[in-house]
Length: 203
Image 1 (cartoon, rainbow, N blue to C red):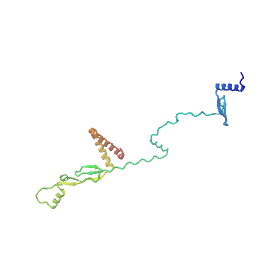
Image 2 (image 1 turned 30 degrees about the vertical axis):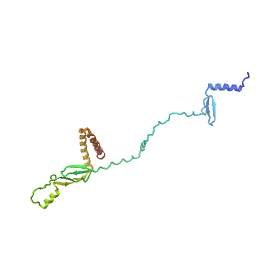
Image 3 (image 1 turned 120 degrees about the vertical axis):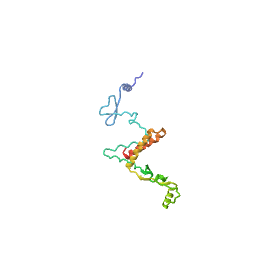
Image 4 (image 1 turned 90 degrees about the vertical axis):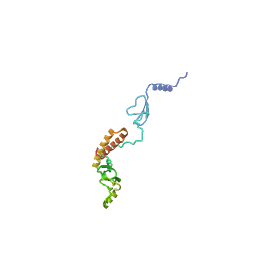
């Protein structure tokens, strides 16, 4: 049998030795690549490992369409001005012909007709002659009813706050004793009055 050439045998032996020990791939300062069985020297740079897919470094947050909150202003920057409070609602204190008062949002209440005795007026059914002034009075009375209209004047902040506090006490008392069908409306009235006092009267 013919003997194999010596270089081939040397290569086979080198390959077997390479399988038995680690081979290091190094790059020198000039960029040349060398393979060696010893670790790369300090002056040589080991080649970087290939990139490995892995989890992202930042936690994924799905975009739900919500806008991100604006960053806080840096130190020394004045805060944005707060919105001014809503204007004071215009309400009117009205007085009836009998002296009772109430609060309305209408400065000109409608005309009403009340019995003549309610305002101190009288009529006569006597057949005695009546003076022209009395005849005119009876004509204006018009069947024992008198035309009246309540007098109203605008309310300021202090008067409104007093009115809201009284109305809140009344509404809270009514909500505690009301039937279930009426309690919801009274509780909403309580919430509205509390909000008016918070915004316009400081609580």
